[in-house]
Image (tube, rainbow, N blue to C red; front, top):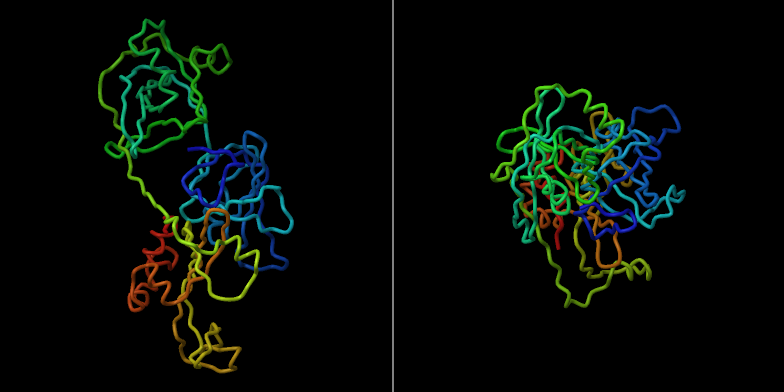
Length: 370
């Protein structure tokens, strides 16, 4: 569901935001370089709360032309982190960080004439009672589009079901979203939580212009008793044990002590940018990354050249507990335990997956874990 920018927290990874773009800009290189730099976006929500978004360099191309200043977007599948910038574009305590699963959709309006209204239905979705109603709209060329609205929006359509409404019944759907029907592959319109607005037969220029475009021969409106084409998806539930006496992330940051600590936290994101392993120096007790030097690999620490190195695995994860959030770095054995793989498995998968990232890492990169 959509939440306000003031309500986001690192622990919550399931909600979405409805935001207007205030500023979208690229981080410029200080000198000419082909290296991609991150992209930054500043938003505000309906309450005027400003929120900063960071798009890492490996995802810049995906979102380079997505944002237009002044337009409204729905954003989901992001990570909430502490606003770590020294120069802050937002006074918000947190900021959001994009990843390869982040979805951004521009929220648009759709207008049409209602030609079918199906009976309201009640369903149990992820253990909760929900109501929906299907209806079909048609444009002035006779092209039809299916629509489904949920919960509080159902009453706005239900009043026209089996009613003696004088035709034509025109509707303007604001802030809706498009989705593909799994069975037929057709595109349909769905309500988008509380942000969607349904307006019927208004005396505005949009309605007047559409009414004038209608032809004399129109498809008669009808009420239908049938099942919805909606197919609910699955959910993922995670619980944390509360009876363990462990140090919190906030205490770790506050005390700034060096040592070994147990922290009970939830993994909300695996921040793998494609470099999840590297060749390290073969000298005993030296784990420095080897750099290419002609046809060999070079260790700056030992000042030695090697034909090849020892592969080390390094995955950065973002974790949260009740009050704090932090990046953790996992090495070698911990990486294999996280993924349920042996070191040999990881070596065999070093060329698989999106952008060189193993499929297991991609699958876990937005799934919460205890």
